[in-house]
Amino acid sequence: QSALTQPASVSGSPGQSITISCTGTSSDVGSYNLVSWYQQYPGKAPKLKIYEVSKRPSGVSNRFSGSKSGNTASLTISGLQAEDEADYYCSSYAGSGTWVFGGGTKLTVL
Amino acid sequence: EVQLVESGGGLVQPGESLRLSCAASGFTFSSYWMHWVRQAPGKGLVWVSRINGDGSSTNYADSVKGRFTISRDNANNTLYLQMNSLRAEDTAVYYCAKVNAYHFDSWGQGTLVTVSS
Image (cartoon, rainbow over all chains, first blue to last red; front, top):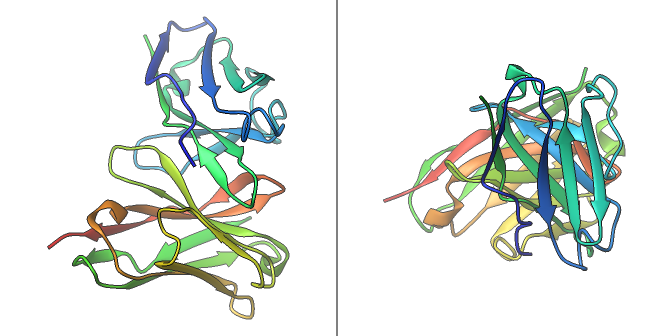
């Protein structure tokens, strides 16, 4: 049950695109198309942005997109906006009724 | 609208126990798996435990197995986490979360548990 690996921080200017990676193993990310992404503002609860690798919940901007290749999943935010500045976490089903999260990535909008 | 409201957090000494509650509304509580996820101060999210709709199946993270017990009362739409033998490393905000398939689609606001002498 080791945490998925995310970069500690990423940054971008308004209007640009950024990508956050999430690297796991063949036992979690690599085995299941069950990666989800969450946005968390300081002191607030996480909010679902992407599920099942690339699906967007109703109400989530199409500026958010997800993908996966092998043991690594990615979240891309296009047309970066100030309101996107937050922490982002990936999560994957890890088998045997367990889940694993990434360590989190702090997104700074310059 | 789905609402999840945690309670029961507080300051306890190492080795003591605490029971967290999560009051659910806005959905058919008994139809969904429910989870607990925690977040130590300044750290990332960590999955803790899950329970199925009728309470007959549970799973735990290795770090809490044997010390924590998840349960639910479907008559009162409430999820619980009984935490025994608490350690300093259990200090965290504890969130209850509703799961839809394999993703956490609704979260409570969290309740802070502090384990310190």
